[in-house]
Length: 387
Image 1 (tube, helix red, strand yellow):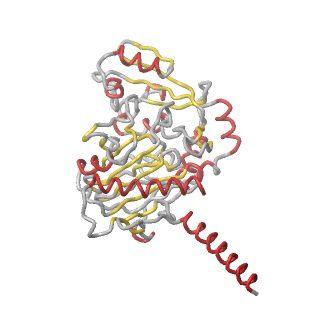
Image 2 (tube, rainbow, N blue to C red):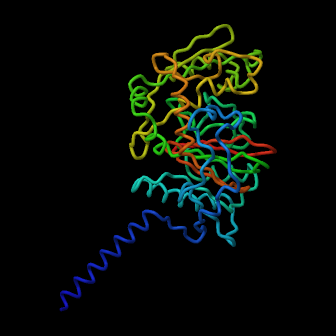
């Protein structure tokens, strides 16, 4: 009888252990500084139209989703600072890192994407955000060679996308067009816009499985070529980003050195630089080793720039825009291939309700980010980091 009782106790202990492991693999330990938020606290407040949206490229193509979906369970995961825990942003960064480390442990166990929305931190301005970022313990990432205009406003903090407010920037992996790219993308909402300006996020793995397998194989076999054409800052064709801005220099020799070091093919025509490189459409995750669909095939297709208001009076061939993507042998993607790629992304994307002071931490090898068009003032800070 005693032996049976011991066996039953052992079975109970094992069962409890299994249940605890299942629970702990899903839920993170918040500790004394944070509490876990709930989904309805970040639900979109109004419907966000997508199909037919002006300056959202491909939104008039067949099957494009009508509206942006709302947040899913833990995507993003809302983590709220407890009241009464007043302390410096440096200290909050150390406590936040504990939550982030747990999220990465969970990712390694069950693949849950790392997408954390921190709310309630004393994050009132760029300086506060910079203090938090610079005390997380990650390596800063240099944006030299990045294709979007970015202006640093505090140490390791830049302004958000400078693309005109009427434009919707589709979900993308930052610098997916480059052999070097940040592993972490963080965005801080310092002032949300009066209308629009939502940040949609998308798990690469969710939309990858929706793509036509034949198209995926074709891209893997032939790779993707990213063409770059940068005019000088004083050229009438410079409407978005000059080579001086992208490479943060006035010296052509420094541009050449960068392109050589990164193994680009390049040439100059007077004061315009052309350069290109082929890259695989997939990359291995730096932690898990999982092969991910990681590229900017549609985000950097010339059709995006062709739709920009700043180019309305200056129609160029796609290869004359700042960036353009093709198959690795130079063959153009068919229009329907690019449309379908964008459709699959937006079908899988979710939005959430920003509050001023929020900070969104993303493992950007897994999670794409975007910015919808907006009206009114909008101010965000962004940071790029390495593990």
